[in-house]
Length: 414
Image (tube, rainbow, N blue to C red; front, side, top):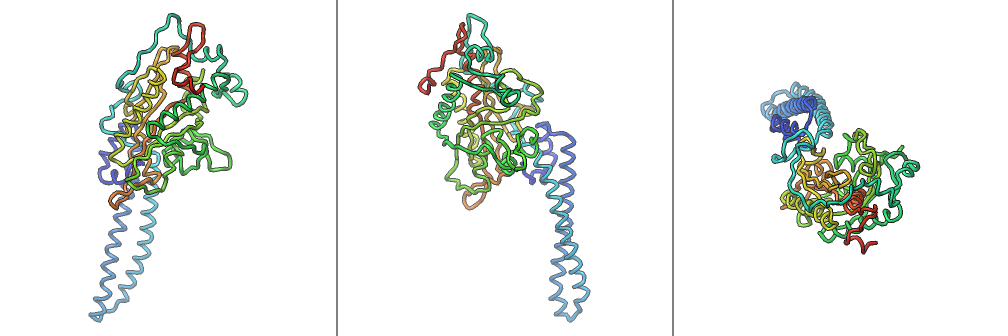
């Protein structure tokens, strides 16, 4: 979450930064009211506390002067009751402000471009040239049906829409991709972890999915456990409530998990095929860094995801997200979009984000440097979404007869 001190020191500047992230005027008004209530409660408590301290000093003076302390004692005792009431009011005001702040997104970096939506994102560069075909390229669901790789109808039969079954060479390719991605990331210095795919509420609050996005999560009935929407959640929260030695940072991690999302806000987009599923596989990159290291590690993570796509021979482009398209916890994000010939467009396959100290403040992840406890920076990125990578391979390496050439780097895994 954002730093309360920023609100208290310079509310207008902080509010302006939040409005760049499309925070509503109503929420800003809520923040302002709650912040002023807290400031007033603190001031009332501190004023009376100062008066109480002065009264307490008078006891010794009165005794020296032979004055009666009866009235003084009555006033001090009365103030104690009032102080307790004021302290409770201050705590209530703090909780009220915290409840609002938990729903407020991260502040974007100052150099993130302004914009309303993805139309204002800024392309950084293209990598590799999209292939040309002597025939009209098919979309992945046509290729999946022809090759028997993906069965959408049976996925619906087993669960509901937006679930699918991958079989035969498709299943083998999926497993090959997971192994290739993990090996590639490990060679880049990211240690491999296998983590739970069910996490508690505290973990999801730590990375920012709760409380705002509860409607998009699958929850276990009668349990405070949720299926993870991304491995970012368990990997980041491995260090929840911990203080790490600065010399041990950065910590760079990778992990494969299934991910589960209700896609509550998708509005019917990509209902056909495997682009937007309720369950999908993903290999994730996560880093915990000092505040000075995070920009360098961010660039390393972007390069890792881009180089992985290049190793697979997949044309892609890198895009800086504008303020209106940034995720809830991100201060800056670079998306990697892979070329899909069947759709004749680039589609997102990875997002790499630096959340600065936003998640670390929520999850209480700190590091010790020269005796001081400092909030860490956390970063995350897809490396990559496995299903979308398989789709990209199918469409970019398709042959006229509908067969698909497997990229050379994957062949040893098959």
